[in-house]
Image (cartoon, rainbow, N blue to C red; front, side, top):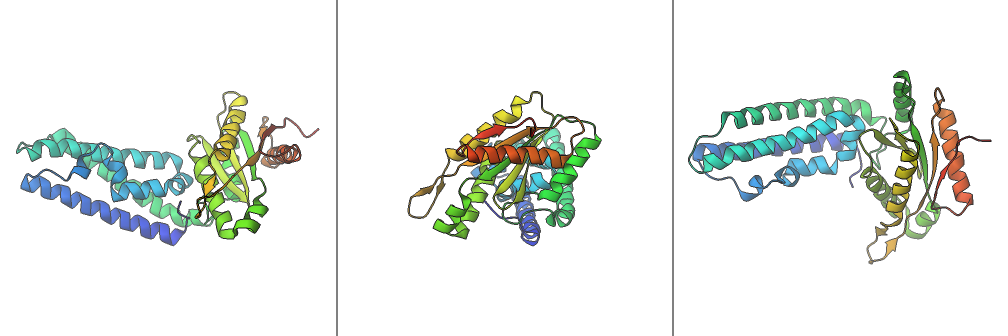
Length: 292
């Protein structure tokens, strides 16, 4: 997993975009010369294996952090562009004219992709001050902003999970801080893979993380997600160079927001639930309805 640094992100974005233009030139040559594109360009998963697709996959958390909806749209139009090129290339390679509908789809999707990329480059500067350089997650100030924005829309179906890595100091002491960083990066990547677009993750501080689930249908949905996260991390230890593994466990406190409840209260309840879980033996999920 790559760390998030503004300069590196923009530089990598420029490099990936240049690779995309070179790829487009290869497609143009095939069209002009009536030759079949290379096999990697014709695969149904070409949008994942091209250099630009690899860049999107490697920086997925950063894109979602900046704007989840636009990230989803970017990934979609990139796939649509590859699908259109494949449809265009097949008849051309056989000496037949391509389909205008496919060409229109390619031009439309590529224009949309470039528009999304311009948006992400512009917003990366602003987001940089609110993003953790190690994990690529938004920091606690973004949590406050996002929560207030949700509150202003009048929707209080929110579950908050306060997560802490068990015995993290011992991991740092035994394996070193660089390995501790790897553990945190693994935790973020594994957890983020379980989240839906309406769920967000933040680095709260040190080895503490917050996951917010919006638009809950039932309160137990948040508890179910918390348990999935706990089990997933417990079952995926971090591998180290000598073939050994570092087991990871987390304790998660869960609180469901009542209508009009301030963020500070919600965090306090989830944090207190997490603390109770630590006292009860760690590696567990605790739901706390109130502090009494």
